[in-house]
Every structure is written in structure tokens, then in C-alpha cells.
Image 1: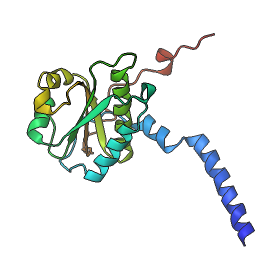
Image 2: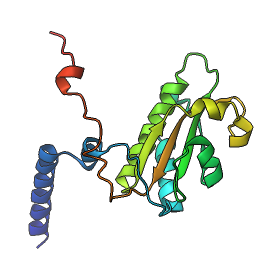
Image 3: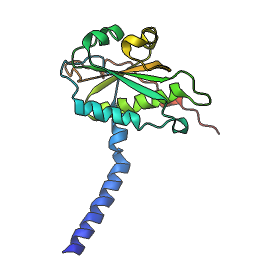
Image 4: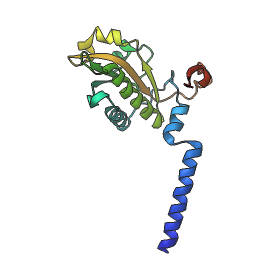
Length: 187
């Protein structure tokens, strides 16, 4: 009986490995299907979802493993509207801040990696996410108000929320460039 179960397990692993090569993994499926949602419901992001998303940001790679980021979580609607005017209750904003001066490292790039990790994590949980760069200047002019740690500057803002599925954001999105427009192969 154990031999039959072992053979069955080996066969299932072989099929699952082959399937993974043909259709992609759950990560590549998410990467190929996500978009930056613009419409959200007021259903709140749960603390468990937020904790998992933040932990994915913490685990992001960084140059020399310096981890030059700090995350400021904002749930208060009034504070959120000072950053992004069309937020709805239940959304969460994560201000990703990087060190102001760190010789020989790349804090802005590293903060981008952490943000992307959280963006993908949010989508893997069925949530929507959108990355904003332009509010950073406003946040940096009011660091105390937004509780940005001393020695850090806001780099980007990640908005997370439950997606308003009544809006067809996928077909209304700006088309992506083709691979031929983006990829150069050295000959």
C-alpha cells in the first residue's frame, strides 16, 4: 500500500511540475493579471491582510540588506484625503519612506522593491492596490503630521482596498506596450 501511495505522490508531483511549466505559477499568474485599480469599495482591509502585506514589504530585497525603509500606515480618512483625495473609508495608505542619506546604497530603489512586494501581496489576497509617487512632496512638507521618522523622506504611497468590481478597470486601462517596443536583444 505504501509503495502505491509513493508512486501516486511521485506521479502527482511530476504532473504538477509539468503543469507549472505550462501555465505558470501563482506568482506569474498574478504578475500577468494585475493592474492598478482606481475604484474601491468601503469594505475595510482586515488587520490580518494588512499584517501579511507589511511582512511581505519587510522581506523585500535591498542593496547590502540595509532595508532603508520605514512604513507609515494611515487608516484615518481625514489624513488619507490630505494625501489622495478620492480614498474611501476602508482603504489603507502605506507611506513608504527611505533614508535621506545613505552613502553607497539606493534607498529609493529599495523602497520601490518593498512597495512592489506589498503591491503583489495585496493582489494575491484579492485586494486592489495602486502606487502613487506624486504625493511624496506634499507628505515631505508635512513630515510631523504624517509621522515620517526623522532621517527619512516619503518616496511613494501604496493604496490598498477592496476592489469595486462593478467597474471594468481592466478593459478601461491604458494598453500595455508590446514586448517588441520594450525589449532589446543584443546580437
